Amino acid sequence: MSGPGAAGGGAHRAGSMQVARLCLCLGLLLPAAAALEFAYHHQEQMEAFLTAVARNYSSITRLHSIGKSVQGRNLWVLVVGRFPKEHRVGIPEFKYVANMHGDETVGRELLLHLIEHLVTRDGKDLEITNLINSTRMHFMPSMNPDGFEAVRKPDCFYSNGRENSNHYDLNRNFPDAFEPNDVSRQPEAAAVMAWLEAETFVLSANLHGGALVASYPFDNGVPATGTSHSRSLTPDDDVFQHLAHVYASRNPTMKKGDQCKDKMDFPNGITNGYAWYPLRGGMQDYNYIWEQCFEITLELSCCKYPHEEKLPFFWNKNKASLIEYIKQVHLGVKGQVFDQNGNPLPNVIVEVQDRKHICPYKTNRLGEYYLLLLPGSYVLNVTVPGHDPYLTKVVIPEKSEKFSALKKDILLPFRGQLDSIPVSTPLCPKIPLYRNLPSHSAATKPGLFIFLVTAFHIFVK
Image 1 (cartoon, rainbow, N blue to C red):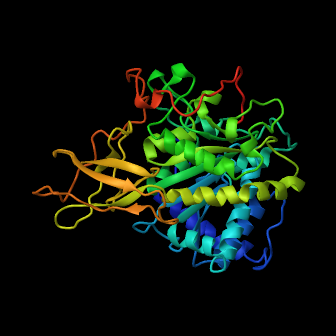
Image 2 (cartoon, rainbow, N blue to C red; image 1 turned 60 degrees about the vertical axis):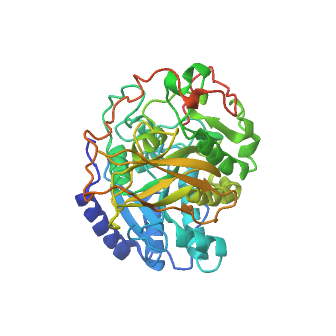
Image 3 (cartoon, rainbow, N blue to C red; image 1 turned 120 degrees about the vertical axis):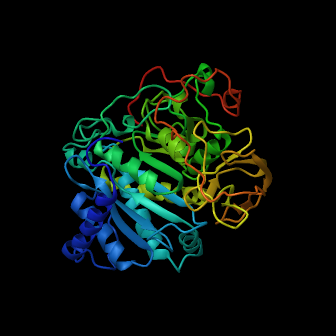
């Protein structure tokens, strides 16, 4: 995780000081009751809005910077939840990241309006109140603020602000599990990687523009993941197709799948990333493989940088999808793993039998696990180094609670000392892990969809 600008303890402390200074300097720029206008907000305006929200709704928000861009702009994240300052056991972590490509601007503004929608309806709207009670939500309106500020002439297809100030595409700047990606790690990507390590994210979406589709992993692949069938599927393909469908089906334009001229059609408004076109070093694959976080990519507008007069249209088309997608963080099963003395155990592998990840999913420092699963019957395989696997059955009901996954704590029956379970050595390395897999996998068998393949590479993700 080398590279300037990597977020660490110092970066977080510096970010807190920046927030305090912003509260003093910018806090009066937006009145408490002022509604957010439908217009593009540059860095100073965005900071003023976020600071006002953090000040006026301090009990349910936390504003912090996870690092800085190449040119020194803060990478702001606003947390919304009943317990915004820290993680609480049983409360899943969710995130939206926008404006990774600086010239793809709709997502940036949608997140600002989503923030306003959530904080102003707490205690007034039952659905929003339940969401805030049950979920810790993180919103990063701009991962590439330098790119956004660099756009001088907005364009529907390509502007020089796509990349960061060092001319790197940030969605090609992450470690890749399928082939070497020996690029210079950029400060924006390094900051996000450190942020992911610091939290227990369960579900995420990355907001882009230039097409109209919900795209799910994998973006890259090998024969073992199905590339010989012009796709690349994860072990959780059923969940990812569900997630993409949840978003697209509630967007009346996206679900048609054919609304962008001169672009390929997407049945039901969703696609497998690799089936669209292969991408090396993407953020959604990195989230899923190395950080135990399910992420999809949302392409929200045919035009990358539309006129701001159209922003109300995009908000109206996406609002229901944005909220419903957050609720999916409560799919499946969650719980803690304990020893015989009731101590929570970190670094215990908890996975569904026959649904294993190449980097095994493990309990966090509080012994928690979160598994996104659709309704059905599953066998959980709980593995502690030095012990035989412990198997336990779980049934996810068809109608589960709207704002909580099924809760299943696991008390391990092993006798003896389990006070300290070592982290696997070596840690799951950030190298092409899939390179040497045999070319057969449950994920590659014929599934629910037949995907189309583009004849050319479209730079929109």
